[in-house]
Image 1: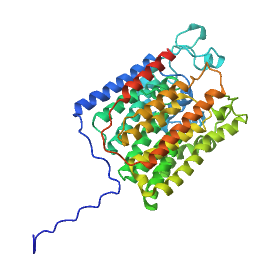
Image 2: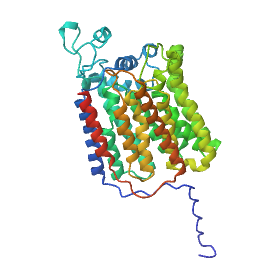
Image 3: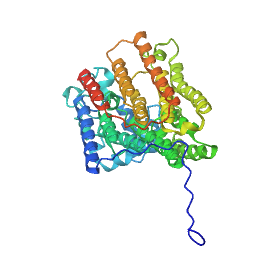
Length: 455
């Protein structure tokens, strides 16, 4: 139109790396049928494998119970695990409001519990009169049931990431959620050791990465902060996001909310129990045993404190090197989905390189990120599934196996492969071909093997 006619607005500039187009979504009832099926499948796997483990359960549920009763100082003093109290803080309202989950100890069908004195005193049998203790509730009538809630948080975060990648609400999303139910590291995080805080941290980190891809920097910072307050390895996912931010303004909008969130969540504990809170934040254990475990760091002939320092600081140092080199080599393209997820997977894989223990639930964060990387690259997830299968076969249970240098070197090799797979993705751009959801049968098979090995 001419004259006083309405002028056409110029189109908004396209992002340098636009997110891929969405594929055809499934109807909402179908999607929810997949979600419910995956949840039922996860509960079934946990139940078949003996229920929620007693390992680390007391160290986690005691501070949670104290917070549910309003005792912040007691919670900080009871926090024996070298990690912040973000998870107990988040779930304590549930424990306070639902009497059915207030119990801090529970029965387990796990037959691998050794008959040690500490086990008899701290985690006595469910109904054996020999121990002269009250009957314990089953895991699903106690705080052990919160392991199922933790899986829901994990799945919700991964779904948000898939939708930011343009692969949400369709078969890819349904397949990945079902795969999370069959993922061995997921059920191991409840059955071999009770670590729902890891689920929270991975799920919140995935949601934070989704916000980064959507350029919602403040929301991403808050999510990263809550994830860090649950488990410190969220920092290994935050560093790639900071490197991918296009400028210092965006980095400030990401980093400052993350730091402020951690500060708000830890300030009450710091005021009431400063030394205990500092130790938990910097991941310094209050005691160190004579560890000789199936990792190269664990087998090394150095002091136990040195092993812990290497396991804590080594991944951070490696991640800093990787993000600086990646930003220098890739530049602004680091904000594309494939390079960002690849760098995140490499940084999380660095945690396994320096780990002092080879507990299998440590594989959770890397497994989820490698699967998300395959989805972002629109390729059959044969790499991530193969890595998950092989690493699960290499991981020894918590007890019953003698440490060996062979297993340690194999574990280190698998960790370096994860780092290499992530770094290789820095040279690729996001593809657009639909990704087949073939990961579920393979993950289900590995989960069945895991269930059989612990039965």
